[in-house]
Picture 1 (cartoon, rainbow, N blue to C red):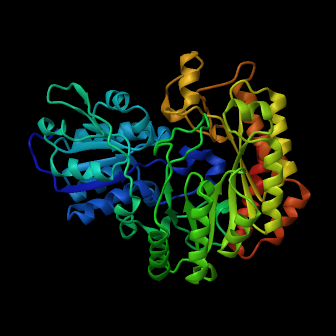
Picture 2: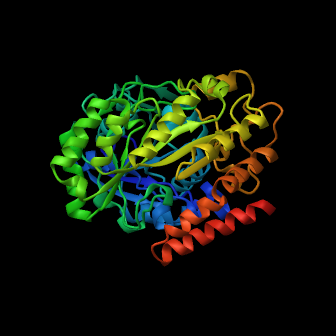
Picture 3: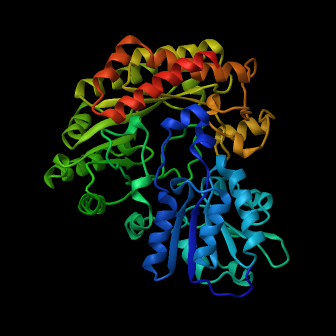
Length: 485
């Protein structure tokens, strides 16, 4: 690590994890390339302070590890920040090791959900990194950028670091930011806008659909969630959200947006105020928007004003068709609530996207089939079936780890789309189940859901252009092929 060098230049890196790495050879055609808003927020905060900063989004630019390092070298900045999600651990480790080989005087700081879940272990396992940020990073990165001298890092909350004697020091956590409006908007102007696309299930049309984060934190206690931003939900003000949408309309000419919050509708009053503002400002006539919600946080009145305000789709975390398993993962909803809310959403004219998990702890094969059949019964427009992965920082991981049921800690294998990846080795398999059966079930779930005649016809009728045609033909081929792989 640099000794006593003041750092006034930062390059922030989204590591080169490819769509094939994430989704497998076949499903990569349908994966999303999303804006790395985490580092874009950091860049916005640094830029506001007058600190020289740049972003390298390796997945969007389709860069290899070596090409990413070439880009980093071009900037010749002193501090290199790298975002780390659990599945990208192996890539990030390789990237850090190679950076230290080629750019020995640079300081490397890591951040992201995996770092927040296990900061000391991350720094221990990635010996070429110098600092790990845990928790929210906007204030932390500014303090680190002004001084990377190990003697002074003791004063910065929210980090662990490697001292001059190579000892790992962990400082106190940094309190969450109470007023989200004090955080500058993400530096989207540093991102290659034309390289991004969400999955087909999250867009109303082919045009650019940015994500706008409206809140942080989640008050619910689902066992598979790490709560990286805490249990208390904090919203941006309605005014801030409206201003940011107006900026996106004027600068990027958007016609759709993804409003991101773990559960947007956790506060009905806030959502109603936001919807009213979207209507009053005329934005509801200019853009469509989608969001994520829970079935126990909406009612007819709320859904109706959301529809009027431009909401075209809601994604619900349904997870399983077994009430026993819903209770076990602390979802705090009933199957009856799920059915009632999905039906109500359909009647309101809002499209539904459902999230489902296969291979939950203690789940039987019969319960897996109950989940698949429940999804078909609910008939959302889109359904996503993922294999259960107990991620670090979640109550599920902690319990399974304590019970000795985590099969390995090869973080790069912690991938919910393992059913489509060659030689996948998922970290947890419920007793009495097998990897082969879970892989087959994930593929079976998608075939049973999407290859129904009425769904097939529905997609045919939705084709608007040659791009849609190619997308759906490819999807149909991949699903048929999966029956033989």
